[in-house]
Length: 111
Length: 114
Image (cartoon, rainbow over all chains, first blue to last red):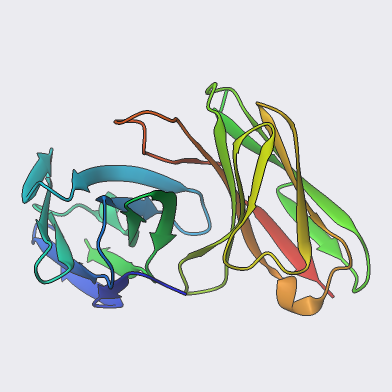
């Protein structure tokens, strides 16, 4: 079963615009991670946020976490054509060190 | 060279055949994972291993088995392949300490069962 659900399922924006995608989950977590997948390839880790953190930045990426709402968002600023990919959130529960992945958001950046 | 490699990259097999997918890593990680991805969906965990003597079932282990031959090698077998096992299979590794929760993925094996 999927712990996380991303919203929207698909998103198309113009190059240069900001892209925001959301992740909701069901149970308490230790950390939440975002991964990127280019078509048919392996996933690449983007950023990890722990349950006691509310916001993290990495380059053009900004992640927020609201544990009271069991939700996270990933913001990509100043999007580029190369950002076209699928983005997945994954949660790790306390005492359970596996990751459970959501269904992903497919992001298309229009040049 | 890639840190996590998978062989083969593509495989076509027939219903009822036994096949093995192999994963090797040079990251020195103790933890290894096998996932399955179906079109348009996220990853589902098949099996995972936290060290050479530790093997655990994931969400969808039925019809699969694994072998952890060494710290660096983790193989996935389909004992008798069926068409609904057609999918993209990924191996991943991670460390064991705080700050080592990131998983590193191989390039995937695309499997078609006819």
